[in-house]
Image 1 (spheres, rainbow, N blue to C red):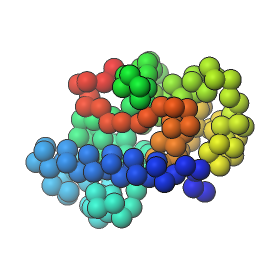
Image 2: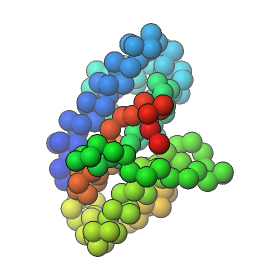
Image 3: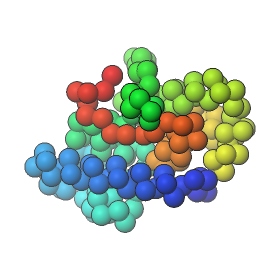
Image 4: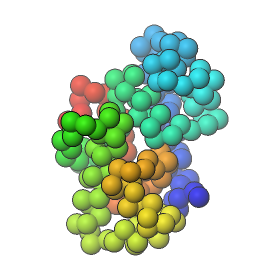
Length: 165
């Protein structure tokens, strides 16, 4: 199911994918080398870079990480990232990154007194999907994460690892 407001979210995702393509070129990496670092077939990376396909959020996190970037939830008015999340020792990298993205969104949702059900209606998904995302049990699609942030008046951007948290 496509989230409501996904046109703008898909456009933003395409921008992120283009930024990662530029970062690969700047790093002097081939698609073959980068795809091995990300753990995907080179044709998958090629399709992502050309905008013919979109990666899962797990793959997008790893793609960005391989190029020394990470996704960040930011306040678009101040352009500052929301508070970092402490890592749990037993969390795999991708789960830590998922928590780092979803915990600020959950906090903002609660501050705005918006229930998971209300947010789900805004996004056009089930309440249980929102619950699984907030509990870091399931990865939303990248466009859904972007739409979710947008519904809460936040944005998703790429930060160079040296400039985030």
